[in-house]
Structures are given as structure tokens and as C-alpha cells.
Amino acid sequence: MSVLIYTESENGKFKKTAFELASYGKEIANMMGTTLTAVAVNAENAEELANYGVDKTLMVTSDELKNFNAKAYAHTISSAAEQEGSKVVIISSSANAKYLAPELAINLKAGYASNVVALPESTEPFKVKRTAFTNKAFNLTEINTEVKLLGLSKNSFGLKETSGAGAVASFDAAIPDNANGVEVASVDKVTGAVTIADAEVVVSGGRGLKGPENWGMVEELAEVLGAATACSKPVSDLGWRPHSEHVGQTGKPVASNLYIAIGISGAIQHLAGINASKTKVVINNDPEAPFFKAADYGVVGDAFEVVPQLIEKLKAFKSNNA
Amino acid sequence: MKILVCISHVPDTTSKINFTEGDTKFDTNGVQFVINPNDEFGLTRAMWFKEKQGATVTVVNVGEADTEPTLRKALAIGADEAIRINAHPSDGFFVAQQLAKVAKEGNYDLIIAGRESIDYNGGMVPGMLASLIDANFVNTCISLEVEGTDATAVREIDGGKETVKTSLPLVIGGQKGLVEEKDLRIPNMRGIMMARKKALTVLDPDDTQARTQAVAFEKPAPKGDVKLVSPENLDELIDLLHNEAKVI
Ligand SMILES: Cc1cc2nc3c(=O)[nH]c(=O)nc-3n(C[C@H](O)[C@H](O)[C@H](O)COP(=O)(O)OP(=O)(O)OC[C@H]3O[C@@H](n4cnc5c(N)ncnc54)[C@H](O)[C@@H]3O)c2cc1C
Ligand SMILES: Nc1ncnc2c1ncn2[C@@H]1O[C@H](COP(=O)(O)O)[C@@H](O)[C@H]1O
Image (cartoon, chains in turn purple, orange):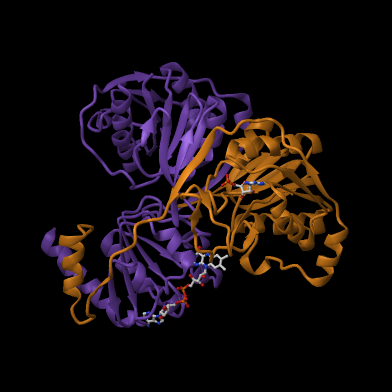
């Protein structure tokens, strides 16, 4: 009966979303009067999950699962759900989670609600709030199947410390034959840099920065803040920055704690993709730029003067608060 | 190679989103509908396979009669034929089942869908479809090459990209990168004329039940006014971010 979460890790370490999923899953388990089980693949330190309410962790250790494989991972999670008799299964909104989710839904004959942002409004019938129209609206979805699959949006629930029983068991699921149909040939991943998906802070530049040669200050600001860098669509279309940095309705969604937009006008398609960020700051020399209507804090000024000063002041702030 | 391109019919990105009937239905009043942007990249890539590798391209939509102009546009861009499954696309599972039936009956080698549709943002139709027809699946696909029955795809991952080797039959959830923005096609007069003569087959849905139901909608709470900080006083900004917003 227990609620099941799939806790993601990288190089053995749990991601922050794993703890957010645990916090969220625990509350649903409480609502339903049951316990919370986690399934983790090639992760260490299962005891960390107990601080966020996990009662039992199923640890999967397998060389075959070293590279992500949607079918194999989905099968592992659905086998765990079957073993636990789980009626609610929760995953994150990472690229990998979104990749395996549809397969998992079919395996479990589950109705799937993605981009969930709150606890269920009720569990019988099961109704949960999710975003729709790329953050331009919310939608209450009712799931009619016996097993429910939820994809939780990042940073929508936060972390809640609470203790769980913290049992640990090893778990092993056979890998289905058809998982070999897609094989990873190479992975090209920036190491060290913060990714937009994981970042707490995102620093983003628009066409107002005039050209790729001016991105030094954006990168420096990001470095001071431990932030990921991003950009508006025209900036990536012009080839100033890689496509992977394009955020917005047709690019990546951003759900960070802080989003700083420099020289970005704030077109509806841009705002749709970044609206889920908690605090938004805009730096723009045009006080009429639409971004000022969407931001929490704004500086009307020339980015080429404001950003370098901001970097210096943040460095001073950081060294005073270190 | 037989290609099926799944097209969802969505409000234009500039649309203001409103609801009617006590916030239970999307208000289509004054809304312009377009080919879902992710599908537009996929359709353009399909055109490349048609022109360079002799593929045939069928476009398919699960939707009511009002989606036909969107399918005609896909035909005008160069698809060979269109199929519409005459049903309200009530949820991702329902749509995937309808598409699975078309995919099986038509024996398609490659099915190109989008990473997500920008209306409901389900991000589930292509993966479910692949699972239902037991085809290989690559999501967030930003590059695709096919040689015989072998395929090489690049998928976007958090923080980078991954190259995968796979084979047909294959379903992809595509997005920008499959082709560049500048290579997207706009129908020309000749295409529009030719599209009128191409077949648009309407099929009835099967009796699959949706597993989820959108019961209500709501718009985000209106935002408070922006706090402006003078460029001469950036310490104040840092103070606000630290003490008020508590984000640094
Ligand atoms: C189908 C479709 C999908 C789209 N999807 C997206 C999307 O996902 N993401 C996205 O970002 N866009 C998207 N767009 C594009 C969007 O409509 C805007 O064109 C785009 O966001 C504008 O980018 P920008 O703000 O960088 O450039 P601009 O609109 O050119 O704005 C530049 C800003 O910089 C300011 N500026 C200039 N000089 C300075 C200076 N020295 N200091 C400070 N500020 C300065 C200007 O005042 C201006 O506000 C989409 C468009 C379409 C049609
Ligand atoms: N009603 C539909 N008809 C045809 N294809 C669809 C439909 N809905 C979704 N799709 C396809 O599935 C992709 C992802 O949609 P979704 O899972 O709804 O986010 C879209 O980009 C389309 O390629």
C-alpha cells in the first residue's frame, strides 16, 4: 500500500529533488494512512532519506543501470511498486524522469499527471493541481485509475524534515529484453557547471547584451551566485549561446529560487517558461519593458554598468557572509 | 521509410489564456490555433527524410473537425496525406491509444511526435505510444539520422546531451534542434493548392477510456508591483534578495 517515490541520484549522491519528493510523498502517505517507500538506483547513503520521512528504501545496485535507460529504469520502478502494492507512485520532473514516466504509466496501468505543484486536493476521488499552458494557468486533474502516477514540479513543494523509519533493503529487478533497443553511445555533459534543471539561481541574458562577446559578465555573475546561465530564444537562434540555454515556452522551463534577467524584454513566451521561478529580478534600460510587470525586483539601467557593479558588490557580500 | 508525424493543435504562443463554463473549459474565443511548435520541428525533419531519402510522410491528429485547418497546413508544408481521428483528445493515454492503432495498421517505421504539447504540457503521448506498440523511444530528441533500419539520435539531458544508437521502428519526442528555427517551413501558394487535393482520412476512435480528466482550471494570482532599485544603490538589491526574498 505504501506510497512509492523514485529518488534520483548523481554519482551516488541523492539530488535535492529526491528530498523534495520524500517530503511531498510523506505527506501523501500521511493523508492515506500509509508509509513511504523510496526506490534508488546506484545511490549511497540511504539514511539521508529518512530525515525527510522515508520509511523504507529499496536500493538497486546494478552495472547494467549505470547509464540511464528509460525502459530498464521504468521496469525497475514498476517492479518496486508492484512489490510494495503502491497505489501512488511519484517521480520528479527531470529530463530522465519525464522520459521514463510514460513507460512507467503503461506498465502500472496508471493515470499520469505531470507537472504537479501541490498536494492532492482529495485522495478519493484523487484530484491534484498541475500547471498547464506552460505556466500560464493551473489545472485540477482527476485521476481515475487504481494506481496514480505523479510527476512533481521542481521547487513546488520544498523540503520538510520529518523522520521516517529508515529501513533499507536491497532490490533487484530483471531488465526487460526490449530495453536494449536504445543504447547510449556517448554522453556529453558539462562537468562542474550548474545545470538549469538543478540550479537554485539562474542568470539569463537577452538580445540587450548586443553580442556573444559580452557574456563574460553574465558568466561571472553566475559564478559568484553559484548559478546556471541561460538566455532568451533569439540569443540562441543567433548562435550567441547554445540551444541548451534557451529558456521559455519553447525552450527549457525554469523553476529556480532566483531568476535574474539581463537585457530581456519579457515577451509572453519567455515569461511563460520562467514564471515558476520564485523570485525574479530584471535589469533593463527601458522602464517600459514588459518584464517589469512580471518581476519582483527591477533595476532600470544599462546592463553594462549595472552588472559589473553588482558582481563587485555581491563578491563583497559573499566574503562578509562567508 | 514510412513516417508518421503526430500533430497536436494548440493555441498560438501569444494567446491569452482564459476559461469558460465556470473555469472548466479552455476559452477558444479569439484564439489562433497552430501546429504545436515541437511538432513543427518534427514535421520539417520529416520533409528532409522525404526529400533526401524518399520517405513518405503521413500526419495524424486526434481531434474534432476544427483541427482540419492545422492538418491542411501540414499538408501544404509537404506531408503526403493526413489522418484525423475524430474525437476530443481527452487525455494523453486516450490519444496514445488512438495513435497506436493508426501506427500499427499503417506499419510506420518512424513516428515523430513532440516532447510536449504547449497546451496541456502532458509530455506523455509519444512515450506511451512507443510503449503500446513496443517500439524504441527517444525523448527530448534534438538530432536524428536514419540509415536502413539503424538510427542515431541525440537527446537533450539535464546539463548536456547524449548520443544513442537505436533502430526502427522508432518513436521520438522531438524539439528544437531536430532542425534549426530558420529552416522551418511556411506553406507557399503552390503547397496550399496541392494540399487541397491530398487525402485527409477521418477515422472513428475506439472505445478506450481516458485515465485522467481535467476538472477545473485557474489562472495564477495576479502579481504584486515590482520593487524598483536605483542603479546607484545596488546594495539595496542585495539586501532585499538576502533579507526579504531570502534567495541569496
Ligand atoms: C512561437 C514562438 C515561440 C517563442 N518561444 C520563446 C521562448 O521559449 N523563449 C524566449 O525567450 N522567447 C521566445 N519567443 C520569442 C519572444 O517572442 C521574444 O522575441 C524574445 O523573448 C525576445 O528576446 P529578448 O528579450 O532577448 O530580445 P528583445 O525583445 O530584443 O529585448 C531586448 C531587451 O534588452 C533591453 N536592452 C537593450 N540594451 C540594453 C542595455 N544596455 N542594458 C539593459 N537592457 C538593455 C531592451 O530594452 C529590451 O527590453 C518565441 C516566439 C515565438 C513566435
Ligand atoms: N491530439 C493529438 N493528436 C496527435 N498527436 C498528438 C496529440 N496530442 C499530443 N500529440 C503528440 O504528442 C506530443 C506530446 O504531447 P503531450 O503528451 O500532450 O504533451 C505532441 O507534440 C504531439 O506530437
